[in-house]
Length: 283
Ligand code: SF4
Ligand code: SF4
Ligand code: SF4
Image 1 (cartoon, rainbow, N blue to C red):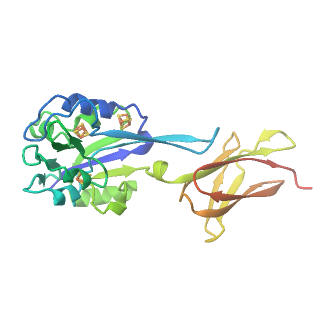
Image 2: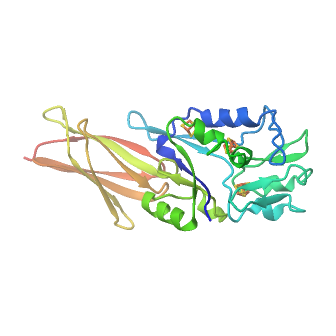
């Protein structure tokens, strides 16, 4: 059977917040029973957008990441609920029953993704429904948030387990926080932009006062001796990405034909711009 899935491509997210706004528009002050009671105007973001900056000027980058309930296949919220107040549908959508869940605040704390909000006024735990009310009436082929995303960062689709397994492999999809062990039905692409770090810098041919295009850069982890390599672009800049934060000591060596190579030491805690290498001709 095909079930719901969503892919969030972090590299395509421009932090426009259309997804958040469309969710508010659909659910604020609108009861969609029996799927969900109305979302309050303030205090709840069933879909939120997180933001990080990596590195330092002028070689820093920014990244935003949209997230909501992951509609997990092993949802801890469901285990914490009494009287079947949280249930998983055959299509994979996890719903908090707005009648049965009344007063069950413990459901909020059971979600490791912090995707559930407590509505003090109605005494209800509330979260993303994957817009099941729209999908079920057949008029919508996807939820409001993915429909509103202008960049294709959010992609909603139905797939069998086999199909999604193939796509996960081909597109290198990952879970956000796999350590939570809840088997989300939401997958992330280019997640390294959010979770990993980079070493960046630039290379100049000192005698010519020119950017060194296509210089070879070799990064070596001192402890493991694992290496990564890159070439500078036509501005003389390089960036080696997908590195583990707080992963210890590295050396960065730069080589360019006819010039003496240079090495810098780096202690990698978070993304870093190690500055310029000024290469001198071999004597
Ligand atoms: S993300 Fe949280 S609220 Fe959503 S299904 Fe998983 S455990 Fe439940
Ligand atoms: S799927 Fe619907 S309820 Fe869930 S975040 Fe998107 S718009 Fe909101
Ligand atoms: S609508 Fe799309 S691009 Fe805009 S913040 Fe949401 S996920 Fe990112």
